[in-house]
Length: 294
Image (cartoon, rainbow, N blue to C red; front, top):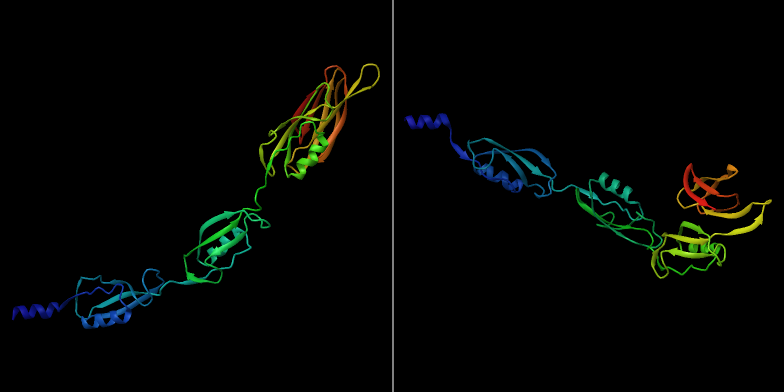
C-alpha cells in the first residue's frame, strides 16, 4: 500500500526518446506512443538536417520525465536558397559585393591572361549565374590578369642615333630609363654606345631600357672663350606632367636657363655655354635628378 501511494504521488516516469534527425511526423508518433507530448518551438534553416526533421529537443534524449511531459523541438527548414548572380564582365570588387548581398561567399579566385579583357574582370564563374544554391555556398571565379605580357629579344641599339632608338623602344612597348651622356672621340654625336639590358636579353613589354649616348657638342664660339655643348634630357615616365628646371653654374655664376612644364617622355635640347668648369643641374618637380659636367 505504501509503495502504491509513493507511485501515485511521484507519477510514472518515462525515458525521453531520441527524436533528433527524425521526421516531424515520426517524432509526433514516437512521442505519443511514449506517453509524451510534442511541441514545435521554432523552425530554422539548417544545411546538415533535412527539411521537416528535428534539429534539437528539450529535454534531451535519455532523461527521465513524467508521463504527459511536453518535449520542445526545433525543426529544420532545410538550407536557405539563393540565386547565384551573373558576374561575368564585372570587376572583382563588384562581384564580391554581390555575392555577399546574396548570402554567398567568394571561393577560389584564379587569374589568367586574356587579350581584350581588362585586368580584374570576371571571365567565368562556378556555379553559373541564376543557379539556385544554399546560402553560404562558395562561388569560384576566373579573373582576367589583362592581356598577355609580350616578351621580346632585346635588339642591338649600339651605333643607332638616339632619336631612332626612341621610336624603336616605343614601337616595342618598352620604356626609356636612364640616359647617360659621355664625351667620346671619333664617335657620331647622339649615337648609342652602351645599353641595358644587353642585346639578346629577354625583355617584357613596359620594361625600362637604359642607354649611354655620345654627348653632342659643337665648336660654336660665343666671343673669345665660349664653347657650347648640347644638353639632351628626356623626362622619365611616371607623372603625366612635370615641372622641369635646368640651372647652369660656371665661372660667370649660376643661371636658370630652363623652367617649363613637360610631359613624361618629352625630350629637351639646350645649348650650354661652357665657361671653365661648367655644371648643369636638372630638377624635376623640385628635386635634383641629374648633374652634367662640361
